[in-house]
Image (cartoon, rainbow, N blue to C red; front, side, top):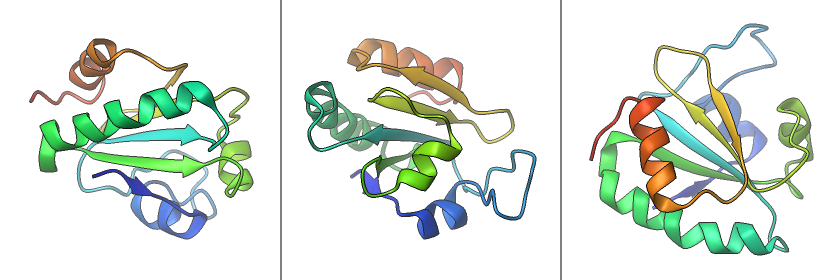
Length: 119
């Protein structure tokens, strides 16, 4: 299942930007992070797809959600101006951002290309 992150859990599980200027991924497996808001229609359409992906990929990747209304500091830290926005965090490379509610097939392609994870 997808997991909601707060600022504290983000610093622990993804990136501690308070201590590191350069990107240093803290996770133990690749991650997809969905920046969303409860009032956002496209975000609501994306949520069940992310839940499906979470089940299909199992413990190969972590799928996290960040409520941009509750966690405005995190949204600002990543320059989130439109939602949904997704941050793809591979284990050994810089993260990449994607904007908009991508279809499931496109998300699977990005997971394979950027996160280097197959089902």
